[in-house]
Image 1 (tube, one colour):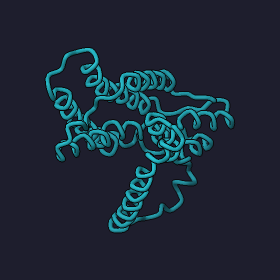
Image 2 (image 1 turned 90 degrees about the horizontal axis):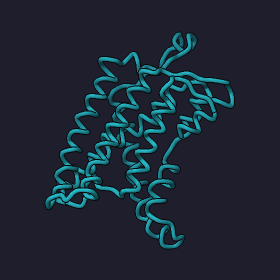
Image 3 (image 1 turned 180 degrees about the vertical axis):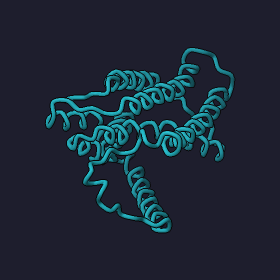
Amino acid sequence: MLGLGFLAGGLKAMEQSYNEMVSGTYSSLLILAVAGLIFPTASQLLAKPLEHGIVRQSRGTAIVFIVLYMALLYFQLRTHKLLFAEVQDDEEEDAPAPKLTLWGAFAITSVTTTLIGFHTYFATNNLEELMNSTGLTKSFVGVVLIPLFTNDPEPIMSGWRNDMDTCLQATIGKCIQTVLFVIPIVVLIGWGMGIDEMSLEFDGFEVAALFASVLYINFLTGNGKSNW
């Protein structure tokens, strides 16, 4: 989605720019997050961990990740919120902003979360039948199909509008949220349910591919400018 955002923006403008501070923060967090995912897998493949050692390591890493994500939210919403504020035109600033009450926001969040829960339950129950009938592997479904179907076109539209800061937040920011919050929460829920198989140990090739992707994103977004 980040690449499609760059492509859409590059088709309209020769070169686009974005906040280097924001992209640098995201890049550093991505490297740190992927390093945390690599250690349990590397320990299993290259070392001789003790019984339940990988599980304990994964749970400790999950706790650290959640604390780091809370610090990121404080950084974004409190101490450095101006750096992450969306850039708006003068006309947009003069226009009255729509207001949403606390109870309205709570109601919308509750309804959307419930609908997403039913959608996820329906989708996951049909994945096994899809893989059996088509011969697709779990890795392909998890890495390609599910992310493709669950992404919204906002990064592409942001690139087309020359708003690359929003494009970065909607792509790299979502990846950081997944690694630092969603995956650790799943690990901790598995811990609470007594499921020792719920850890941060992944396939070696998948971790290597993820690390290579993060390195490429770091090089790609390092200079604060983009084109197609």
